[in-house]
Image (cartoon, rainbow, N blue to C red; front, side):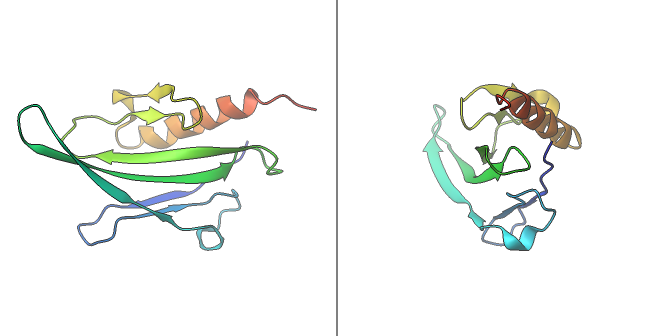
Length: 120
């Protein structure tokens, strides 16, 4: 299994930043940058909500033959997080991934994706 370092900077300073160890080598400095975009949307109550989006391609297997896209989204004003498989749109985890549980949920999802890859 490939392990990836992920660092999200949501400080009040701009811009918001995401660092992903896409190749799984433990070094965040040799991977492409991931820039966040912000989208605003109107809500039924007339207020606006905003969300920040970023994505990265990562190695799912250590040899780099199988890659997958990981999407990160921070939605402001929604009370819980959702982890979604960027390839299929499947919801992998929801309210249970606050705080330290997020890393475990991502690791479990990547392990399942790697196990589903046919081995030659």
